[in-house]
Structure formats: C-alpha cells, structure tokens
Length: 470
Ligand SMILES: Cc1cc2nc3c(=O)[nH]c(=O)nc-3n(C[C@H](O)[C@H](O)[C@H](O)COP(=O)(O)OP(=O)(O)OC[C@H]3O[C@@H](n4cnc5c(N)ncnc54)[C@H](O)[C@@H]3O)c2cc1C
Image (cartoon, rainbow, N blue to C red; front, top):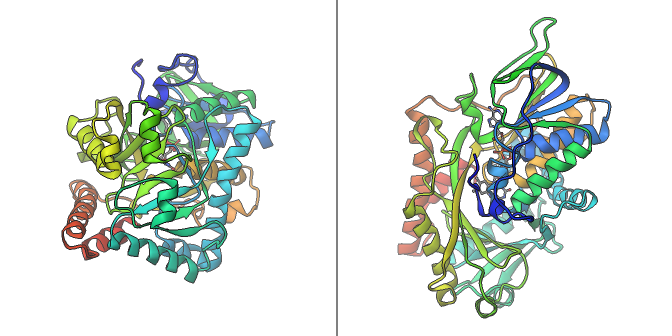
C-alpha cells in the first residue's frame, strides 16, 4: 500500500506520501489493553491511558498505517459538536446531561490544541471558529431556528456565538448571495494526517507500542479465566481489555456487520490559489465553512493556500462494502467542483482540482455516537461519530480511559456512555439497510431541490433530518 490516500498525506512535511509501516505484530502477546485501529479514537485512547497510567502495557494494532482511515482523510474540522439530535441527548441524560455533553465536547477543541502544542505536533491547528453560511431565506430561517432552539434549551453561549448579518459575513468571506451566517467559535482547522501521524508518535513517546500492517480478524470476550483476545493474521493478543476503534470498517469484523454502517464522504482540493483569488474571496481567517443547504458542503482554507471541500459521494454501498483505496468517481469530483464554483462565483471560475479522495464514516442506527465498556467481557468500543469525529474521538479516548481504569469521573457519566454491555441499536439486515441509508440521502437531495425551486422549507428535508438526527 503506497499510493497516498489523501492530499493530507501527499503534503505531509518531509516530502509527503504514505509513510513506511511500523513493524507488524511478531507472534502472540499478552498486554493490559489491546486497541484495534490506529485512527484518532484508538490513538487518543492509548495516549490517554499511558499518560495517566504508565504502568499499563498498551498495544495498538493497525491494519494499514496509523491515520489510514477517516482520520487521515477528513475535512480537518476540530468541531466542538456531536452528531445526534439535541433531543437524543436530552432523552438520555435530561437537560442537565445534554448540557454536560455539550460542554465536554466544546472544551475538547482546546484540549486537542493544548496536547498538540505540548507534544509538538505540527498540524497547522488554528482555533478560528466556524461559519455556517445561508444563501437563501429558507437557509437563514433554518439557522435562526437553531439559534432559537439553543437559547430555549440554555445551550446558547451568548459570548462569541453570533448570527451574523449580510455585511458581517462579507467582512469574513465573500460568498455571492450570502444573506447571513451562524458563527460558532468552538472549532479549529487542522491538517488531519499531520495530526494522526504526530499523535501516533506521541503515543509511542508515552510508552505504548504500535504495530502496523497487522489485521485483526476477530475479537473475542473474556471466557472464564481466559482473557479477551484480538486474533490477528500474525498472532493472538490476549488482554484485560480489547478496545475496538475501527469506525467505518467495523462491519468487516465477525459479528459486527450491523453495528455501524460505513458511509462515504468525498473531498477535493484545489490548486494553490494566488493572492488575487484570495483577495477576491476575502477569506483571510481560517474559519471552517459550511453551506446551510440540506446536502451541505464543508470547506477549509488549507495552510498551503488551497480550498479543500467535501460532501457526499456515493454514500453507501450494498452490504456495507467499503472501498478503501478506490478512485473517486469523476462525477463526484465534478459535483464537488461545481459546488465550489457555485459558492464563490467568478473568483473560482477555471480553478484546477489537484487531488480527490474519499473515506468512510461510521454511522449507528440512531445516528448518535457512543462509548461503551464492559468489564465482564473485557470489550470496549467507541464511534458512530457520523461526520463529527475529529474532536469527539479525543473525548471518547479520555472517556474510555476512565471507564477502563474504573474511574467514576464526570466523563464516565456522560450521556453517550452506554450501560455496561450496552450496544448501539443494530441496523436492519440488507436490503433494508441499503434502502434506509440511501433513502435518507435521497430525501435530503429531494429536499434541497424543492427548496431551490420554491424558496420554501421542505417537509421532506425535515423528515430526513429527523431520521438522521440533524
Ligand atoms: C471525507 C471525510 C471528511 C470528514 N470530515 C470531518 C471533519 O471535518 N470533522 C470531523 O469532526 N469529522 C470528520 N470526519 C469524520 C472523522 O474523520 C472520523 O469520525 C474520525 O476520523 C474517526 O476516527 P476513528 O479512529 O474512529 O476511525 P478511523 O480513522 O477510520 O480509524 C479506524 C482505523 O482502524 C483500522 N482498522 C480497521 N479494521 C481493522 C482491523 N480489522 N484490524 C486492524 N485495524 C483495523 C483502519 O485501518 C483505520 O486506520 C470526516 C470523515 C471523512 C471520511
């Protein structure tokens, strides 16, 4: 495996490209904690465990190289937000639980920035907030409704959070037709692969071991006096705890086919934009950008002077198939480029696309992320972040740490922690799973079209939003 999986890997400092894999597992091992998957979730869990409990023997087993999955391919939004309808969190933890969940994820943005600085992880991280830009009355009304709901539920910070008017938006970024935007300060921009690779190095410095090029083929619980085990193609790892951190790839493991659905998100990056184009666009800060349409696009201004934009590609493949290395269809690249040019207008006409890639997110049946650990089975896992996992995976890593060492902390009592032995609700078997996921995206696309034609909010969008927790 040598072709870079994203612009983020191609542009890593020191020449770019896929890094050589660390040595694989060399026969059977016995450890305290075996972490399966070297993305952010697995790496943060290992880092936090070793940072606070250096006596624990922690091993990370990665099938490819650390950051190969979504962690090295994402949009680079370190967002202080979680997937899932606010009512889900209220339902699980009451109003107070929902507030604690929100406070914890917002504080995580600063937590990641602090670790990156302390560990010297050079990943272009800038805490600069995020703008959700409305380009029609319907979109603006959706933002206003969000603001109203946040105020009603006591979730509006009232500080730097702001609904910006047309001129205030134009002062930050010139998007033709923008009528307003929601600014949320709880977001940082990051170079995703640089964060993943730097974090893997920090995990090793903290004293955990990482093996790469080693596929886990099965995870089995504690049986009597036999500890939990992660079976691999290169030996078995017995452990007091096995943490599954495989997100969108989870369905490939035995018994996990219906735990998480892998949903594809695709990205392109432009050529470096010259000073003239940047002057026209006027996007001089590093705020991440989202358009407020039902089938939104997410964007970042990269540290190397390009725009990276992502959106839905072919969202779901029958039978939860994941195309781990396949090329992005030309039609998806064209759609994303069109979306970009439509957003910025003439300033980006003729802009070249330098790279395109995609990756898989993990989505639970209730579209809500979770953390779970059960000391009687020795099994733990976290994920289902949908498209909001960069910050959430750090919070999950710290939460798993507390659960694994039996610490009764505030983190261990957050509403996303399932009771011991709890699992997220399972997806339906095929073909219902395929029909369900495709149906949600079909409805969102239809809703967008109706909004564009009529200029009015569509019930179809609301229905899809209710189903998918947005
Ligand atoms: C295109 C795209 C854009 C995104 N944009 C954003 C964004 O801007 N902001 C945001 O918050 N979130 C975003 N996300 C989501 C975010 O990237 C993920 O939620 C997050 O990276 C998940 O981290 P993870 O460690 O749980 O999973 P992953 O990073 O997918 O890591 C799982 C790891 O497990 C390994 N693995 C799988 N199976 C096995 C096995 N059997 N044995 C051993 N190892 C195995 C894989 O190789 C992989 O390295 C985006 C995702 C994508 C795909």
